[in-house]
Length: 306
Ligand code: ADP
Ligand code: MG
Ligand code: ZN
Image (cartoon, rainbow, N blue to C red; front, side):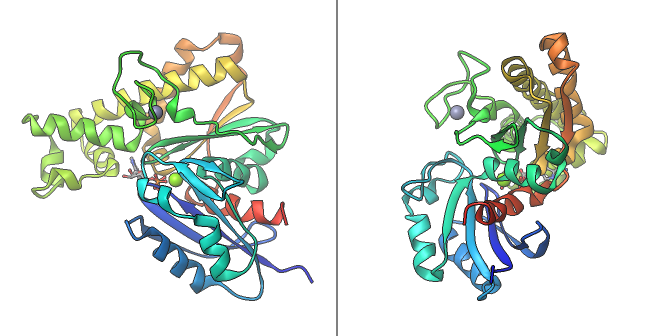
Protein backbone atom coordinates (compact mmCIF):
# COMPACT_ATOMS: atom_id res chain seq x y z
CA UNK A 1 0.00 0.00 0.00
CA UNK A 2 1.24 3.47 -0.86
CA UNK A 3 1.52 5.75 2.12
CA UNK A 4 -0.98 8.61 1.98
CA UNK A 5 1.00 11.62 3.13
CA UNK A 6 4.31 13.46 3.03
CA UNK A 7 5.60 16.10 5.40
CA UNK A 8 6.64 19.31 3.63
CA UNK A 9 8.91 21.88 5.27
CA UNK A 10 9.68 25.45 4.24
CA UNK A 11 12.51 26.93 6.25
CA UNK A 12 13.01 30.65 5.68
CA UNK A 13 14.94 33.45 7.36
CA UNK A 14 11.81 34.60 9.21
CA UNK A 15 9.37 31.69 9.22
CA UNK A 16 9.47 27.92 9.57
CA UNK A 17 6.43 26.22 8.05
CA UNK A 18 5.65 22.53 8.29
CA UNK A 19 2.67 20.68 6.78
CA UNK A 20 1.16 17.28 6.30
CA UNK A 21 0.26 17.01 2.61
CA UNK A 22 -1.77 14.40 0.73
CA UNK A 23 -0.89 12.78 -2.60
CA UNK A 24 -3.20 15.17 -4.43
CA UNK A 25 -1.42 18.19 -2.97
CA UNK A 26 -3.96 19.04 -0.30
CA UNK A 27 -2.70 20.41 3.01
CA UNK A 28 -4.20 18.34 5.83
CA UNK A 29 -2.67 20.39 8.63
CA UNK A 30 0.11 22.92 8.98
CA UNK A 31 1.97 25.04 11.48
CA UNK A 32 4.08 28.15 11.26
CA UNK A 33 6.60 29.24 13.87
CA UNK A 34 9.30 31.90 13.92
CA UNK A 35 12.73 30.76 12.75
CA UNK A 36 15.14 30.79 15.72
CA UNK A 37 18.67 29.65 16.53
CA UNK A 38 17.13 26.38 17.75
CA UNK A 39 15.92 25.59 14.28
CA UNK A 40 16.70 21.87 14.23
CA UNK A 41 14.73 21.30 17.45
CA UNK A 42 11.70 23.25 16.34
CA UNK A 43 11.77 21.54 12.97
CA UNK A 44 11.99 18.11 14.47
CA UNK A 45 9.23 18.84 17.06
CA UNK A 46 6.95 20.07 14.31
CA UNK A 47 7.52 16.96 12.19
CA UNK A 48 6.95 14.83 15.26
CA UNK A 49 3.51 16.31 15.83
CA UNK A 50 2.45 15.31 12.28
CA UNK A 51 4.23 12.01 11.99
CA UNK A 52 2.53 8.61 11.54
CA UNK A 53 2.89 5.28 9.68
CA UNK A 54 1.15 6.96 6.76
CA UNK A 55 4.04 9.39 6.12
CA UNK A 56 6.00 8.42 2.98
CA UNK A 57 8.85 10.88 3.59
CA UNK A 58 9.94 14.35 4.58
CA UNK A 59 10.84 17.08 2.09
CA UNK A 60 12.82 20.05 3.40
CA UNK A 61 12.95 23.29 1.43
CA UNK A 62 15.58 25.66 2.80
CA UNK A 63 16.61 29.19 1.91
CA UNK A 64 20.16 28.88 0.64
CA UNK A 65 22.53 26.98 -1.57
CA UNK A 66 22.05 23.27 -0.89
CA UNK A 67 23.83 20.04 -1.73
CA UNK A 68 21.38 17.22 -2.51
CA UNK A 69 24.22 14.70 -2.38
CA UNK A 70 25.50 15.77 1.03
CA UNK A 71 21.96 16.41 2.28
CA UNK A 72 22.82 19.78 3.75
CA UNK A 73 22.85 23.52 3.30
CA UNK A 74 26.17 24.84 2.01
CA UNK A 75 25.53 28.57 2.40
CA UNK A 76 22.52 30.50 3.65
CA UNK A 77 23.01 34.28 3.95
CA UNK A 78 19.74 34.74 5.86
CA UNK A 79 19.99 31.61 7.99
CA UNK A 80 23.61 30.96 8.95
CA UNK A 81 22.73 28.61 11.81
CA UNK A 82 21.54 25.95 9.35
CA UNK A 83 24.96 25.70 7.64
CA UNK A 84 26.48 23.71 10.48
CA UNK A 85 23.77 21.06 10.61
CA UNK A 86 23.85 17.64 8.97
CA UNK A 87 20.21 18.22 8.13
CA UNK A 88 19.06 15.21 6.10
CA UNK A 89 20.92 12.66 8.23
CA UNK A 90 19.68 14.14 11.50
CA UNK A 91 16.05 14.01 10.39
CA UNK A 92 16.39 10.61 8.71
CA UNK A 93 17.90 9.12 11.83
CA UNK A 94 15.02 10.36 13.91
CA UNK A 95 12.08 9.43 11.65
CA UNK A 96 13.47 6.59 9.51
CA UNK A 97 11.73 7.53 6.26
CA UNK A 98 13.18 9.04 3.05
CA UNK A 99 14.24 12.66 3.55
CA UNK A 100 15.24 15.09 0.82
CA UNK A 101 16.51 18.61 0.77
CA UNK A 102 15.81 21.25 -1.86
CA UNK A 103 16.25 24.99 -2.14
CA UNK A 104 13.09 26.69 -0.76
CA UNK A 105 12.30 28.56 -3.95
CA UNK A 106 12.87 25.48 -6.10
CA UNK A 107 10.45 23.62 -3.84
CA UNK A 108 7.93 26.46 -4.13
CA UNK A 109 8.26 26.39 -7.93
CA UNK A 110 7.58 22.66 -7.91
CA UNK A 111 4.53 23.21 -5.67
CA UNK A 112 3.15 25.86 -8.03
CA UNK A 113 3.66 23.61 -11.05
CA UNK A 114 2.00 20.69 -9.28
CA UNK A 115 -1.14 22.30 -7.84
CA UNK A 116 -0.81 26.09 -8.16
CA UNK A 117 -0.67 28.89 -10.74
CA UNK A 118 1.96 26.99 -12.64
CA UNK A 119 -0.48 24.28 -13.69
CA UNK A 120 -1.38 26.28 -16.76
CA UNK A 121 2.18 27.17 -17.77
CA UNK A 122 4.74 24.92 -19.37
CA UNK A 123 7.73 27.11 -18.39
CA UNK A 124 7.87 29.74 -15.69
CA UNK A 125 10.18 31.40 -13.20
CA UNK A 126 9.11 31.60 -9.59
CA UNK A 127 10.36 34.34 -7.27
CA UNK A 128 10.11 34.04 -3.49
CA UNK A 129 9.87 37.51 -2.00
CA UNK A 130 10.51 37.21 1.74
CA UNK A 131 13.40 38.00 4.05
CA UNK A 132 15.59 37.42 0.99
CA UNK A 133 14.78 36.75 -2.67
CA UNK A 134 14.90 33.26 -4.14
CA UNK A 135 14.18 31.75 -7.53
CA UNK A 136 13.09 28.46 -9.05
CA UNK A 137 12.77 27.61 -12.72
CA UNK A 138 10.27 25.25 -14.33
CA UNK A 139 11.17 24.43 -17.93
CA UNK A 140 8.79 22.27 -19.96
CA UNK A 141 7.08 20.99 -16.78
CA UNK A 142 10.37 20.04 -15.12
CA UNK A 143 12.00 21.67 -12.12
CA UNK A 144 15.50 22.61 -13.25
CA UNK A 145 18.05 21.06 -10.96
CA UNK A 146 20.08 24.28 -10.67
CA UNK A 147 20.53 26.91 -7.94
CA UNK A 148 18.57 29.67 -9.77
CA UNK A 149 19.77 32.19 -7.17
CA UNK A 150 17.88 35.07 -8.73
CA UNK A 151 18.24 37.18 -5.57
CA UNK A 152 21.98 37.21 -6.12
CA UNK A 153 22.06 38.65 -9.62
CA UNK A 154 24.01 41.84 -9.31
CA UNK A 155 22.10 44.97 -10.30
CA UNK A 156 24.64 47.52 -9.06
CA UNK A 157 28.34 47.08 -9.84
CA UNK A 158 29.49 49.23 -6.94
CA UNK A 159 26.69 48.25 -4.63
CA UNK A 160 26.64 46.85 -1.15
CA UNK A 161 28.76 43.80 -0.41
CA UNK A 162 26.55 40.73 -0.07
CA UNK A 163 27.32 37.75 2.21
CA UNK A 164 27.25 35.58 -0.96
CA UNK A 165 30.51 37.20 -2.13
CA UNK A 166 29.03 39.38 -4.88
CA UNK A 167 28.16 43.09 -4.58
CA UNK A 168 24.97 44.92 -5.41
CA UNK A 169 22.75 41.83 -5.32
CA UNK A 170 19.05 42.20 -6.12
CA UNK A 171 18.20 40.93 -2.65
CA UNK A 172 20.15 43.77 -1.02
CA UNK A 173 17.75 46.24 -2.66
CA UNK A 174 14.41 44.55 -3.09
CA UNK A 175 13.86 42.03 -0.27
CA UNK A 176 12.03 42.34 3.04
CA UNK A 177 15.36 42.67 4.80
CA UNK A 178 16.46 45.41 2.37
CA UNK A 179 13.24 47.39 2.89
CA UNK A 180 13.76 47.16 6.62
CA UNK A 181 17.38 48.15 6.64
CA UNK A 182 16.49 51.18 4.50
CA UNK A 183 13.76 52.08 6.99
CA UNK A 184 15.97 51.66 10.04
CA UNK A 185 18.96 53.60 8.70
CA UNK A 186 16.78 56.60 7.82
CA UNK A 187 14.87 56.46 11.11
CA UNK A 188 18.18 56.38 12.97
CA UNK A 189 19.06 59.63 11.22
CA UNK A 190 15.83 61.17 12.47
CA UNK A 191 13.58 60.78 9.45
CA UNK A 192 9.98 61.54 10.39
CA UNK A 193 7.57 58.70 9.71
CA UNK A 194 4.55 56.87 11.10
CA UNK A 195 6.93 53.93 11.42
CA UNK A 196 8.30 55.51 14.58
CA UNK A 197 4.90 55.14 16.24
CA UNK A 198 4.44 51.64 14.83
CA UNK A 199 7.70 50.53 16.37
CA UNK A 200 6.61 51.41 19.92
CA UNK A 201 10.06 52.69 20.77
CA UNK A 202 12.12 49.94 19.15
CA UNK A 203 12.76 50.53 15.47
CA UNK A 204 14.78 47.32 15.28
CA UNK A 205 11.57 45.33 15.81
CA UNK A 206 9.84 46.73 12.72
CA UNK A 207 8.88 44.36 9.91
CA UNK A 208 8.43 44.87 6.18
CA UNK A 209 4.73 44.36 6.81
CA UNK A 210 4.76 47.40 9.14
CA UNK A 211 6.27 49.40 6.29
CA UNK A 212 3.39 48.33 4.04
CA UNK A 213 0.80 49.22 6.69
CA UNK A 214 2.38 52.63 7.21
CA UNK A 215 2.30 53.22 3.45
CA UNK A 216 -1.41 52.36 3.39
CA UNK A 217 -1.92 54.83 6.23
CA UNK A 218 -0.48 57.56 4.01
CA UNK A 219 3.15 57.61 5.14
CA UNK A 220 5.17 58.93 2.20
CA UNK A 221 8.50 57.61 3.47
CA UNK A 222 7.12 54.06 3.79
CA UNK A 223 5.61 54.30 0.31
CA UNK A 224 8.94 55.52 -1.08
CA UNK A 225 10.75 52.58 0.51
CA UNK A 226 8.39 50.08 -1.08
CA UNK A 227 8.41 51.75 -4.47
CA UNK A 228 12.17 51.96 -4.49
CA UNK A 229 12.47 48.27 -3.62
CA UNK A 230 9.87 47.52 -6.29
CA UNK A 231 11.87 49.42 -8.87
CA UNK A 232 14.88 47.20 -8.21
CA UNK A 233 12.71 44.11 -8.31
CA UNK A 234 11.58 45.27 -11.75
CA UNK A 235 15.20 45.36 -12.91
CA UNK A 236 15.40 41.73 -11.80
CA UNK A 237 12.21 40.92 -13.73
CA UNK A 238 13.57 42.60 -16.87
CA UNK A 239 16.81 40.62 -16.66
CA UNK A 240 14.94 37.34 -16.28
CA UNK A 241 12.54 38.22 -19.11
CA UNK A 242 15.38 39.17 -21.45
CA UNK A 243 17.43 36.09 -20.66
CA UNK A 244 14.72 33.43 -20.53
CA UNK A 245 11.50 34.81 -21.95
CA UNK A 246 9.37 32.68 -19.60
CA UNK A 247 5.62 32.30 -20.14
CA UNK A 248 5.13 33.57 -16.63
CA UNK A 249 6.82 35.01 -13.58
CA UNK A 250 5.03 33.64 -10.53
CA UNK A 251 5.47 35.51 -7.24
CA UNK A 252 5.25 34.00 -3.77
CA UNK A 253 6.38 34.98 -0.27
CA UNK A 254 5.30 37.53 2.32
CA UNK A 255 6.03 40.62 0.23
CA UNK A 256 3.42 39.66 -2.36
CA UNK A 257 1.10 41.15 0.29
CA UNK A 258 2.42 44.57 -0.79
CA UNK A 259 1.39 43.95 -4.41
CA UNK A 260 -0.39 47.25 -5.07
CA UNK A 261 2.68 49.34 -4.24
CA UNK A 262 5.78 47.18 -4.47
CA UNK A 263 4.95 44.68 -7.21
CA UNK A 264 3.08 47.25 -9.31
CA UNK A 265 6.20 49.40 -9.34
CA UNK A 266 8.28 46.37 -10.33
CA UNK A 267 5.95 45.62 -13.23
CA UNK A 268 6.18 49.22 -14.44
CA UNK A 269 9.97 49.14 -14.29
CA UNK A 270 10.18 45.80 -16.08
CA UNK A 271 7.91 47.09 -18.86
CA UNK A 272 10.29 50.01 -19.37
CA UNK A 273 13.40 47.85 -19.50
CA UNK A 274 12.69 44.46 -21.08
CA UNK A 275 12.49 43.81 -24.83
CA UNK A 276 8.95 44.85 -25.76
CA UNK A 277 8.34 41.59 -27.68
CA UNK A 278 9.35 39.50 -24.68
CA UNK A 279 7.61 41.66 -22.06
CA UNK A 280 4.35 41.38 -24.02
CA UNK A 281 4.50 37.58 -23.80
CA UNK A 282 5.13 37.20 -20.07
CA UNK A 283 2.41 37.06 -17.43
CA UNK A 284 3.43 38.33 -13.99
CA UNK A 285 1.08 36.66 -11.52
CA UNK A 286 0.81 35.93 -7.81
CA UNK A 287 1.28 32.37 -6.71
CA UNK A 288 -2.00 30.56 -6.02
CA UNK A 289 -0.56 28.67 -3.07
CA UNK A 290 1.07 31.81 -1.62
CA UNK A 291 2.61 30.99 1.76
CA UNK A 292 1.86 27.31 1.16
CA UNK A 293 3.90 27.02 -2.04
CA UNK A 294 7.08 25.87 -0.26
CA UNK A 295 5.50 23.31 2.08
CA UNK A 296 3.34 21.90 -0.72
CA UNK A 297 6.28 21.64 -3.12
CA UNK A 298 8.64 20.06 -0.57
CA UNK A 299 6.04 17.36 0.11
CA UNK A 300 5.32 16.97 -3.61
CA UNK A 301 8.98 16.29 -4.31
CA UNK A 302 8.76 13.30 -1.95
CA UNK A 303 5.80 11.82 -3.84
CA UNK A 304 7.55 12.36 -7.14
CA UNK A 305 10.88 10.89 -6.07
CA UNK A 306 9.98 7.87 -3.90
P1 ADP B 1 10.85 33.87 4.68
O1 ADP B 1 10.49 32.76 3.74
O2 ADP B 1 12.11 34.57 4.32
O3 ADP B 1 10.82 33.44 6.12
P2 ADP B 1 8.19 34.91 4.15
O4 ADP B 1 7.94 34.61 2.72
O5 ADP B 1 7.48 34.12 5.17
O6 ADP B 1 9.74 35.01 4.49
O7 ADP B 1 7.80 36.47 4.30
C1 ADP B 1 8.06 37.16 5.49
C2 ADP B 1 8.40 38.58 5.13
O8 ADP B 1 7.31 39.18 4.42
C3 ADP B 1 8.62 39.43 6.38
O9 ADP B 1 9.68 40.32 6.09
C4 ADP B 1 7.28 40.18 6.51
O10 ADP B 1 7.41 41.38 7.22
C5 ADP B 1 6.94 40.40 5.06
N1 ADP B 1 5.50 40.66 4.82
C6 ADP B 1 4.43 39.91 5.17
N2 ADP B 1 3.27 40.50 4.76
C7 ADP B 1 3.64 41.67 4.13
C8 ADP B 1 2.95 42.73 3.50
N3 ADP B 1 1.61 42.76 3.41
N4 ADP B 1 3.68 43.73 2.96
C9 ADP B 1 5.02 43.73 3.03
N5 ADP B 1 5.73 42.78 3.62
C10 ADP B 1 5.06 41.75 4.17
MG1 MG C 1 10.37 31.49 2.24
ZN1 ZN D 1 24.35 38.06 -3.01
